[in-house]
Amino acid sequence: MRTKIPVAGAVLLISAAAVAADGDAKRGASVYRACVACHSLEPNVHLTGPSLAGLWGKKAASIADYPRYSEALKTQEFFWDETTLNAWVADPAAFVKDNSMTFRGIKDDKTRADLIAFLRLAFAPDGAKSVVAKGLLPARMARGQVPESLDRARPEEQVVSVRHCRNSFFVVTANGTERSIWEMNLRLKVDSGPNGPKGGKPVLTQSGMQGDRASLVFSGPAQISTFVQSKC
Ligand code: HEC
Image (cartoon, rainbow, N blue to C red):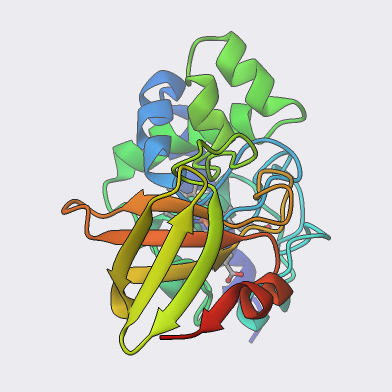
């Protein structure tokens, strides 16, 4: 009864290896741009998804300080190589049911082979440095879409006080202006990392095409309740 399983596995292995061998790492680097919103290639830089530094040959969901792996991925026993990466990027939801990577997959075999040729270099030890040095990927893409550093906020971004009244926030900044913002247009965020706001003051950042939306970034959750006053 068991003979069918190794046979099927061997067929999959051979075809995936053959596909990956044809891949072009330079073209694959431009395919990788689809990943940079959520991943960094630098060690210990976790965004929506975990850092992918040194991932080649590692067990699935084994980056120790990434805190948000799904149960579905954590319970997998496989290791990352061209076969598993090929299946994952083709259709993550089909390969590991109920995982939390919201990416619909790359259906084209050639595009995937190019990507995997690039990932082989990028996921090697010191991969971020080497793909940048080889001119395959700009350094900022290797770093991923890390939130901008808030420690040098301009006066019009440094928040002095925040008041909530009826359905509005009134935000006073260090340049002396007060902005009134509809409560649904102001996002309260926390950046507890090294790029987060300094000096105990939150930072106001603009977002959205119309300029009507903004974010208030705090350095930690406790700061939100001490800073935001209910007062009309
Ligand atoms: C919208 C955000 C997002 C995008 C885009 C995205 N990922 Fe992910 N990725 C995640 C998340 C979240 C996880 C963790 C999944 C889980 O725990 O179930 C993950 C996990 C992974 C893992 C497993 C890591 C490990 O430690 O086992 C790999 C490999 C991976 N992604 C590769 C890619 C590649 C390659 C691309 C681009 C083709 C990509 N991802 C695009 C969010 C994303």
